[in-house]
Image (tube, rainbow, N blue to C red):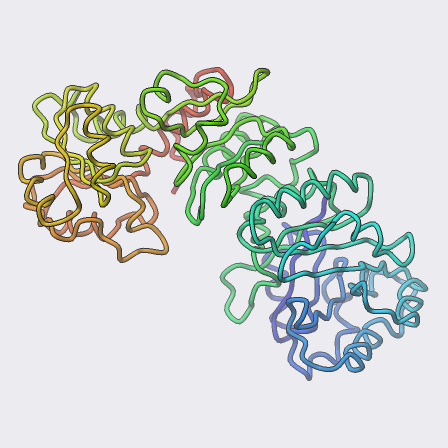
Length: 503
């Protein structure tokens, strides 16, 4: 079972021990990052393992490797020596591990470590990429066979992430730590056990004066409670969400909570990818069972589908991938998720005699337009790129226009309901407003499909004018329930229907 390591980056022992105590129940190992300690504290590092009360890694990371140590190599080696000196027969009082870079060759340090049972983690860090052959690098970096090989690399694309997964397969059976730093590599931290890795590094999120140990680290609480880290095995079914940049998603919380409640051996993981091709290749290589698809890939995944539902065919957009014996199938659950949510909010059975504005022309807008048409509504489609607004409107003989003054004027005839489907207003564009030129009169029902933040600037303006407003949270839950049915070929469990999974 892969272990969870908490990186301790406080300036003092007291701060590190305080943070460790908060997360102790989630972690197996602590890493003392001596490079973050105040100079006076560094003289006391030999005492830390006994104070910590669990296995500790001694690490003094150089700037070139993403660390914080600015002294020369001589002073760094002296600090390592101080940490390993005066070892005791009771190994619990010694550092359990010491992290030595693969280009650091100091036999006296290695001998001191091995004499008293301190295991050497032989590490390689690349802050600019992943290198030519990560698997070969892992195999060739060990000085002695009892060392643990570690490679922490910074992918420049999702294709790099895919190659790291490939390296994990090529080194199966080898005791190793292999991970991708940064946002692109989040899945490698969650799936450490699946990749055959010894441990995954975590950080104490939100602690004052306690920086992350490396880019992209998760909190141990999220790793255990949200991503079910201790339940993942090489046999665990893998599901995920594809999007980019995928800074905001609550789908893992929904699905992983359901998996836990239903005792399903599965995990749902974010895959932020800058390439559909690289993701689909990785999905096949790791036997991904299914995936949600979000911005900007709902149209771009279509060429990879061997089978499409009628809704996907008609909409030209897919938000659900299912892997079967014949390859990938695509479905769209946005449609019914959207209409179920809006109808419930308005208390109506259809959109007859309703005149509706749809802002956007992407996959979510296509789903909304199809449902407005199916449920007998009339609509105006507004989009920054006029040709896209016209193309979507033409499918249903709707009106169309741009996100400009003329579009705002047209909305006066289509403002019973206003549906905002773009990503404008989502992190990091929190001040964005897709149509500032429109002034709400207070009688509109306004739905913004964004759910984080809870109220975008657009929705806040509408509420201030007296409009009834709805964000995309309820739609997210409803479409996710339909996705569950697509993934498992059965109804979403009735006992869970009324649960509010995402706060």
